[in-house]
Each structure stands twice: as structure tokens, then as C-alpha cells.
Amino acid sequence: MLYQRGMITAPNVVLAGIVGSGKSSLAKSLYTRSLPFGRRVYVPGDPKGEHTAVAEAVGGKAIILGHGLRNRLNPLDEGHRPAAASDAEWAAQLASRRRDLIGALAETVLDRQLTPLEHTAIDLALADAVRSAPVPILPMVVDRILSPDPTDDPEHRLAEDGRLVGHALRRLVAGDLAGLFDGPSTVRFDPTLPMVSLDLSRVTENSTLISVLMTCSSAWMEGALADPDGGQRWVVYDEAWRLMAYPALLRRMDAQWRLARHYGIANMLIFHKLTDLDNVGDSGSAMRALASSLLANAETRIVYRQEPDQLGSTAAALGLSGTEQKLLPTLGIGQGLWRVKDRSFVVQHQLHPDELAAFDTTARMTGALALADWDSSAEGSAPCRIGAGSEACHGD
Ligand SMILES: Nc1ncnc2c1ncn2[C@@H]1O[C@H](COP(=O)(O)OP(=O)(O)O)[C@@H](O)[C@H]1O
Ligand SMILES: [Mg+2]
Image (cartoon, rainbow, N blue to C red; front, side, top):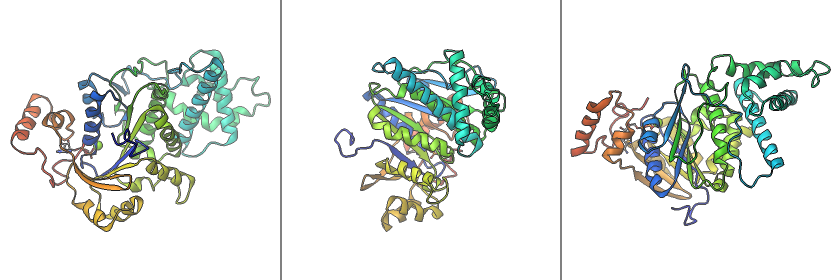
């Protein structure tokens, strides 16, 4: 609304707070309450699987990925073609999108930037794979990096140049991530649904691999997102601190955030503390600058409860006053300091009892009993009183 009135110019939201402070619940309220106004919601990677029930409740779809499950997503899918693009423009867009993605995946697994030689190895392998199949899949690219077409490699040096990249990517097709992104897609991304979420909770816990998955899945959604006629949409990165540690992902996110306004997209980035952004790259590095620009590109910054050792850095990052800073450790569940551009508000997020039942992440107990309990507790008083310790209401 503020965006429509021109009071803010960037619709992106950054939300930080300790585990159990109510971040995900706020996100779920913000996006579900916007559905009746025609907004759509995409969650490109949900490591805890906590948006799945919400997606199903609102008539959307959750795609559950995991070892031993049938679902596959091909990150090299052509995706959605904008109506305005000519054949040549489309071919160029597609080639650069695929090149960027494979490069980002390789950098994430290698945990360093690629060399020019490695970029060339990827380029030639991709071009070769595209020639051999209309929709290439990742194993073809890996094969061609490890054993390049002899006509591309008369001096037999290309294979050597691409060896490390080839083996890094091989992890996604034959290693611990095999079976998720290594074949033709078995599901379609339907951008007309009110909500689509990628549930990664069945993927074995490992931060590098989850980040790789989030890169693949956000790229997979990107084709459909990059449509200026797609209407207004939320893209929610819950548990985003997992992404922040990877420069390649950060660069992609930064590019997406810059385009957000053009495409009618509001990004929501959820993490624990603002210093998650500081852990990116060395101090003063280009990566650190990128991380700060993500923060700068969000005119709405919501700070939930912070650990005492975080207060100084949070205050510095957001330019908080002494009073605002003192407030942070006293915030209860669902309470936050909202900084909208240069104005500050203390906001209590009121969860409707039905929202609480649908969003709850503490109740490990399942089924009607759990719901009945929550209903009765919601009847008389606030279900989770402000100021309750994080033990009473934690999410992990
Ligand atoms: N505004 C709120 N009012 C009452 N209870 C809340 C509120 N927000 C969150 N909770 C409770 O706290 C629990 C943890 O919230 P969650 O959003 O998962 O925290 P986080 O994502 O910060 O770890 C939820 O399951 C819910 O029961
Ligand atoms: Mg959460």
C-alpha cells in the first residue's frame, strides 16, 4: 500500500530475529493476507518445509524434493518465454541464463570464483549439450566438461581446464545430490497458482547442498518470475542466512532484487541477525558491499528480538537511535521494530487463531488433538503471550 502511494520505492522486505521470535509466522500472515488482493506467493526453497501446509491451504502447491522421491527439476529447462522476445533474443537470453546458473552452481560447490579457463570449459560444454538435445540436462553438461568434444579441444587442454568444475558439478548428478536435478523435470511450475513452494525438508541437512538446491530452484522459478505481466508477487526466502554465505548466490540475488520492481516482485529475506550479512566475504570486499546493497534495497527492515551481542551491529547497520536499540532485547514473540524508510514503528503482529493453527511450528504433535488444544487456548487469551521466553515458543 505504501508502495502504491509512492511512500516507498522498493517493495523488498528484510526481516531479522532470533529463532522462535515469530519471523516465519509474520511472513505467512503478510503473504496469505495479500492473496485476496490478487498477489501470488513463491517460496523458492523452504528448508524446514513449514510453508507446505500453508501453500496447500490456500489452493497452491508445494513441490517436495528429496532423496528417494520421484520429483525432479531440471535447472536447464527453457522456462517461460516472454511474448515480446524475438527468436534471436530468446536464444541469447536462454544461453546466458543457463551459463550463469551453471557457473553459480560450480562456484558454490567449489567455494571460490571460477577462472576464465573454467568459464570457457562450461560455455563450450553447454553449447555442445544444447546442440545434442533441445532441452539439455545436467549430466550432459558434466559429461561434456569432463570429456569435451575433440573438435572443441584440438590441443586436449580443455578437459584439463574444466576438470575441477566438472567434478564439482558431478556431485549434483552422481554424488550426494543425485536424483533431484539430474533429469527432465517431472513437475511444471504453474505461475497461475496462488502459491508455489519448494519443500526441501526431506533433503539431508547440509548447508552447501541446501544452498545449491536453492540456487537451482530459484533459477527454475526465475523464468516465470521474469515476466512483467505476471502481476504482483512475493518471493520469500525463509532461512536466508543459508544463502548469504555463498557469493555466487548473493550475486544472483542482487541481480534479481534490482529487477524486482520491473517485474512486480517484492522479495522477502528472512534471517537471524544482520551480522549474517557481515559474514559474507572479507570486510570491505565486493561481496560485503553486495550484502549491504541487499539491505539498502529493502526500504522495509523489520527487526525482531536480537541477542544482546548483536545490538551494536544491528544499530549501526540500520542507524538506530539509543532508544530503539534498547528496545530490541525486550521484544516478545511477534513484536518487532519496523523501519520503513526513515520512520520507525513498534509493531505487534496479531495472529488470528486460525492463522496460529495453520502456521504453527512448535506443535510437533500432529492431528486433531493438537489443533483442538490450540483452539481452546486461543479462546480465552492470547495463545502465546508477549514476553514468553523463546523456550516456550521456539521453532527449531
Ligand atoms: N504474533 C504471534 N502471536 C502469537 N504467537 C506467535 C506469533 N508469532 C509466532 N508465534 C508462535 O511462535 C512460534 C514460532 O514462530 P516462528 O514464526 O516459527 O518463529 P521463527 O520463524 O522466528 O523461528 C509459532 O509456532 C507460533 O506458535
Ligand atoms: Mg522461521
